[in-house]
Image (cartoon, rainbow, N blue to C red):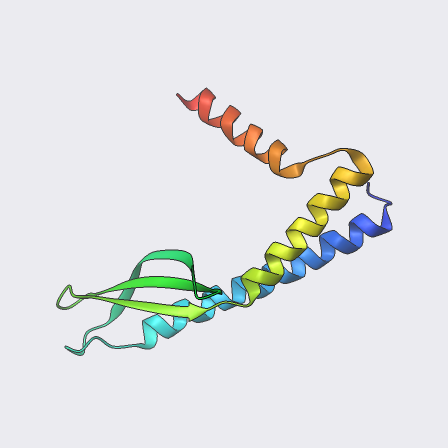
Length: 119
C-alpha cells in the first residue's frame, strides 16, 4: 500500500481533515476558557461530547466555574467533523474495495484484544 497513490491521497486528506477538526476543538476550548462565569470566576471544561440537532453536528461542552461551582453549557457547530468523517469513510471504502481490508474492524478487534488482556 505504501506505493498506492490513491491510498496515499486518501490518507493525506483524512490527516488534513483530522488536523482541521482538532483545531476546531482547540478553538472551542479556548472560547470556553475565555468566558467568565456570572460570578466572575474562571470556567473550566469538564465534559465534552458531539451531538446532532436539526441536521447540524456540534460540540457540546459543559464547563464548571472554579469559584462558585456552577455549570454552563456551550454548543458550537462543527463543519470539520463532517469532512473528517467523509474522508475516513472514503479511505475505508477504498481499502475494502482494493485490498479487502476494513481498518475499522481491525481497530475494533485490536481494542477488544487489548481490553481482554487487561482483565
